[in-house]
Image (tube, rainbow, N blue to C red; front, side, top):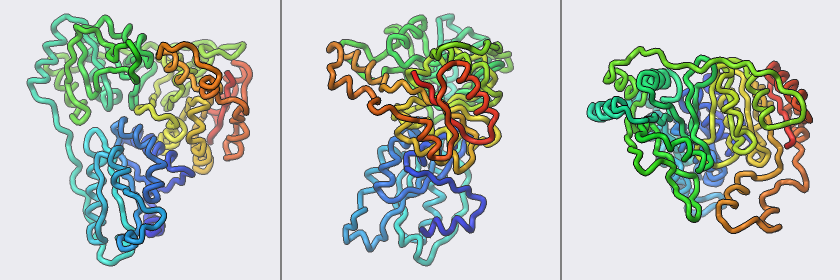
Length: 487
């Protein structure tokens, strides 16, 4: 409460209220992805932190900076074992790269500065500072100056030379990009390398952020479905990792391989996520003597607006045709939205944000954070109905902050991913009890009523013409809107 009181003396810090901690941590992730600096979350003791862990897991996997301030009971009160007491460090540690409990008011300023430095250590880390109440109200606090931000280490020269040799070999090679190699200078350097060496640019399925669209390099996303990813990778004899991990399947399955690469494919890391990927790519360009090579750019496409009954391909064409320039797309539509990325590769230039950790319920909060970081840009949020229900409270925050987010809910009324994973087990079709667990009907969710109750105008569409009209209106409006698409 003392920190909340102090916010009135710090008008430079913007306060955004979330009705659930999972919205708060997901929004901080979206802010960090687009602003490239940390947001700060304020969470209430161990249970509040626990409520935010699913999206902290996603943010940790995204490699973004974030500072969590978690309140704790006064140090002398803990001996009474009050109802909200818990081991907060144990809760935080699996989802944070830096955890510390402040011991006194004298140390608070230094601990806060250390948390910011930890969060801004490459590629971006989750830093959790636990603050006992008496550290806030006791005398003796000292403001600490923020030290210089740490620089990411760079790969060794021999690593650069080895990678250059691989690209000169003539073997079919892919660059698997992640982190800041998928936007800005990093992506431009990678695209120049690809243009000069005939290498293919790939992104993992769980990527953090990609700049894409017309006039930008085309980076192909690896498929979620294992067999499709294996088909994408079968031609390559060399894969160079740039801030990325080697591809694996999300889950194991009986009798199935977990690694989609061919057995004779050599894997080499140009740089780890903790190293400076932009430096590594530009140094590789210099080693190949190709700095400044014009990268290949995606050609613009102008699909006609679709008409007729709702179809997944028609929805994707509509998004491609209407997506505003410089928009931000937040995507958690693993089943219904699978055609969206291929259809929009030639759309107006935009950024695309994905679920990095596989914990569902990230799209709506991520859109909140992205919209706050980039208030002049339009945000399109693509969510399934099941995952959207995890953090539907984010709609209220969109309305309260007046955020320009157009949310599309694909209402297929099933957990489609779970049905697919069940099919991989080789145990036949699900019985009635199992099948019931994969369906989210009876009763059907009414997203329009839900959205309106939280201050976001909503509409349900029954045709592609209605969808394109609602999508255009959403992009033209100054605040949030929602479109429910029954499938």
